[in-house]
Image (cartoon, rainbow over all chains, first blue to last red; front, side):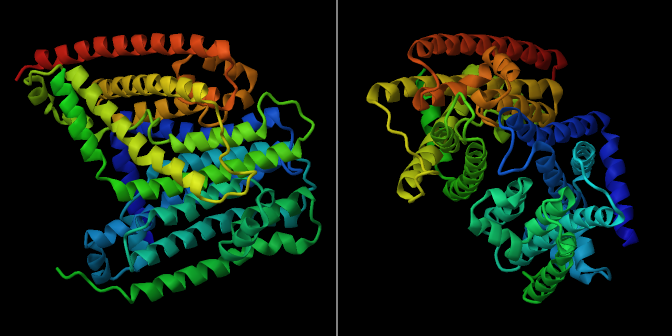
Length: 258
Length: 270
């Protein structure tokens, strides 16, 4: 694990060498992410609610899911680009090394500046929380913390699923992006605004709703049953399943030979 | 002139090779279009008594039009071939050729945009009419012939404007030697004020006002507005005039910038 953090530091240092490029990248990341929450805020100047949810409630929902996604993009870009590892034959090299496959896959690429998006989501979350009248207690703080952590864990799992698919084929990866990027996009808004089919899919199959929507309902008081606050913990189960699937699929790997 | 036409034809045939990537891109757009539509439907259903400048049918059609023409209207697309010429310095080989490099690049970029119409827009349109979507989320435009003609005129002008802007972006890359920053900036500003992020009639008034002074609304808001009815009859002809004005401005700026950029090459010698 320490090799992971060492590599991360190295990447960061090398990125900062090119100061002008680094500043441009930071500004770009800021502006692109800005359009995501700007859309929500702008629409709420015209409409005053969406299926009963107000602007700050939607922003809280948005910030939780975006936090997880951007953090995983920052930490584990290599897993998202797993197909490159296999195509280039670098995966064979990984197998020969004494460290874990997943850790090594994570470090082969870093998207350093995605952390800007994570920071922005935290700021949006704080703004949303300040403007919401949440009746805080220690349990609710706990719920918020596990929501953020589960959001990260769930995307890590989904990325691993995408990497598992790479052991079978490197065609058709755009469809994987539909679940990661498209799913994240959908989960920005409270999942209940969509048709029933989507709600079911994102609760039981790829459970994005469990990490932001249901905890949101509990935090803002729309649901008072305290079990709603524990739903994010299912992300741990989901992650374990994804990791297992990944390890299973990696056994199927036949080297291209070198 | 004939050399430019043959270049156009060659590039067009070349671009038509990329079919698999096109299919993948189309399905992604389709899905994102659906998500946007569902969000807007939820907004409209939640605020039934609100007076809005545009109704949900218009918004749905507008979004589908945006998806149909997504690739063709992608003004911040980075052409790797031209970019490499700039960043690697191979541009000097291009300058030795008898064609004017500005118009040569213009033709190259324009043929690419045009190929996207054939390769992406028309298939996406056919797909939309074939797939049985629930009528609340489906594409349901049925305009009169004259409106279609007016739309196509505006579309052609938009394409010229988009290519001109795209060309300026590449010339800026020559000055700044970094493509990401300029491209991202253009993407953000453009997506906001063209109406591709959110339909302009749904933006706060101040943004609509700023948008009316910028060329971006002629990418999405104006041509699609003709089809869905948010642009009134007399506004159409004023719109054409403004589009042509912007084309001249942008092309003029681009040409001048190119001259300055080229002088730099000569000065650095070699």
